[in-house]
Length: 470
Image (cartoon, rainbow, N blue to C red; front, side, top):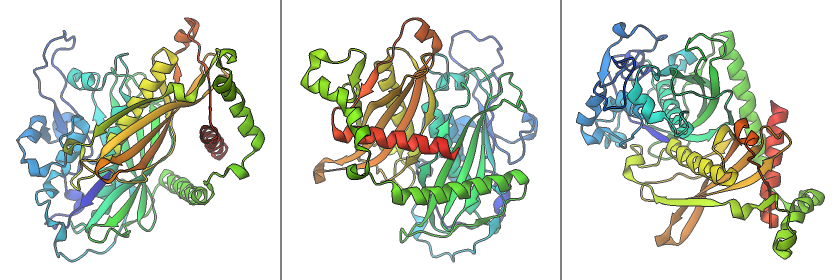
């Protein structure tokens, strides 16, 4: 995801820029027991930088107003009400999208606190049935892919707020989603209880920043419930000069509370570990344990050479593959013409979910997504190919088998006869215990080539390193 920061100057300080959204709330449906019929009330979005106040104390933004805005204000026509609201909140700075070459003097760097970038969005699933319908999956749960897309949009807004200075100016920056740390679903997310997304900048380097986001939903609907955290996500953004494309410094950060200091230390440790792993992550078959490689390939060779004798409880990786291809449309772009990282995560998740469903024969439930690096930007008009497979399964716990899925995104340019990997995504799913009781069995997945075996070893080692680090 790339968010350009245009040179702007206002008469108010950044802290008073009310359109930089903090809270999204939606007016309740007047009928508490609705029947399946068209929805007449139009939801209203409300914004504030303080803890969620009563609806009557917050200015409302007409949800339908976005369709009346000039098209030049919009980077793309998103279907998510949350991404619409976030872009609507920032649309006042996009009224001159061609002004990135302005000669306004660059403002000085300032030091900000995490509280100044803290932003929250409230999904009122319990009362807004139209919103609930947009996020409901076929099994009456929440579409995780849409939440991943919303998290990316929210992280972008938070990054922008941190880079906005007290004098009401911003420097000519592009903010780029560089990576997303491993996300683990702590509990299922329901579609009939209010959901809250909240986050802030937790750590800042020279030209990068880490934003930590929480997805909160209490079992009993009480916001302060101790069991409310359903998912924690850490997004890393880097700043680029919009004219040169080179790295650019960002505002510093000063943690104030004890919790903010702990989050800063944890983020700093993760950043150092990422740099260390970058230099050690090269796979070389000569440096790998030959016994592990041969053990993984043993059953695959039987499938290839003596298929009639192959284990019926196993399946080759290549026989679990699915893929889809599409042209990246202008409706998925940001104002710089690049495709949002959140859109790519949603499409990858949906393909991984479908792959798991076809493999398991039962509706899967999401457990985690591993670290994601955005290696190459994706532009409007690019031909994107997503290829997925079940990389391996973990069957030690029969009641909760684990299914590890790999999705590789290729940016393909037929005119140039080129194809490059833009992203790799790794998701872990399971199936519900009821399906196991009904006789659903998950098969073992085996590689048929050394290249596949090395990919499996790489993922297993990465998973073990995450467990050791935690």
